[in-house]
Amino acid sequence: MTKKQRQATVYLLIFLAGMAAGALAFFVVQVQSSLPTDVVVSKKSEEPVKRVQRPEIREMLLTPNEFSRPQLELKEVNAVVIHYVANPGTSAKDNRNYFEGLKDSGATYASSNFIVGLEGEIIQCVPLDEVAYCSNNRNEDSISIECCHPDESGKFNDNTYQSLVHLTAWLCGRYNLTADKIIRHYDITGKNCPKYYVENEGAWTQFRLDVEAYISKYGEDVAQTEEEPNEM
Image (spheres, rainbow, N blue to C red):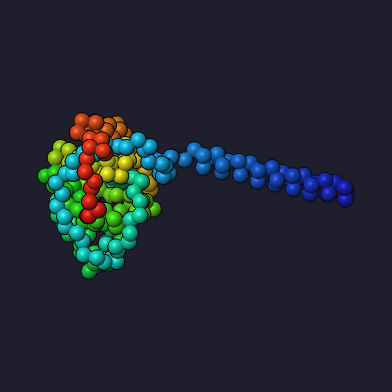
């Protein structure tokens, strides 16, 4: 191979490397633009969301501690995140006590603002103005709801479901959130949670529709309701 041929080969390799780098950059941009948009924080509804009455909530706040109630300020709420406890047959109180026990065991960082039980009971573990350790990178701008379930399918029974619809509808009105701001843990991290509503997309769509229907039926315009006190 002559000197000119070697030079031509080098130039060709440099040109091909440049083309490959450009193609890779284009591919990355295309992949990023096709990612799911559910995890992107968007603006709240410009129109006030009707408010429903607050459901019955039993306050059983966790003891302030590093592992389940760090008392970090929750400065804004852009989503309500639905979870399942992944522990069939356990009660809301059982799961609340698990979170409480983390202050002593230090086994992990975990908690939730609310837990909905098998009898439809709602227990609040973390105040609404504090961060709960439940939704990964959305902890700082969301309210979390853990739900109990009777079996391995992860499907909520009717008592749990009805209370969840009411609680979620109330939170949507309180924070002026539309149904597209009701998301699953799955929509944040890809985790199979809440299991039944990841594996049954139609049931998840129906849940959002049921929340909208509840707000439509029982909600009142903000001007007709008293302001919520900033407790819990």
